[in-house]
View 1 (tube, one colour):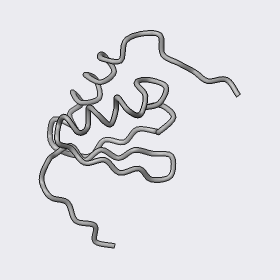
View 2 (cartoon, rainbow, N blue to C red; view 1 turned 180 degrees about the horizontal axis):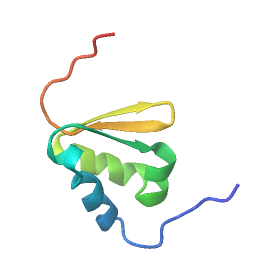
View 3 (cartoon, rainbow, N blue to C red; view 1 turned 30 degrees about the horizontal axis):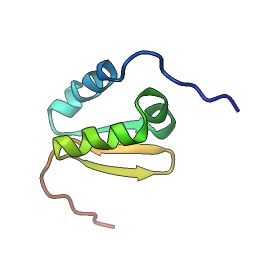
Length: 76
């Protein structure tokens, strides 16, 4: 299996992700785990989420970022 890696710095990707209309409005953004790993790596992604005080859910092969720092509640 070939591992794809990004040759450019991760900052533009991070700026693009958190600059989306959804992220700015406090909504949810979704990215595939493989894409995150290829573009910036899990650790850097986690740091960026934590730095902003956002919430992160990993489900199946997707990351769901809840782009606000308020409380969340899982209903079921």
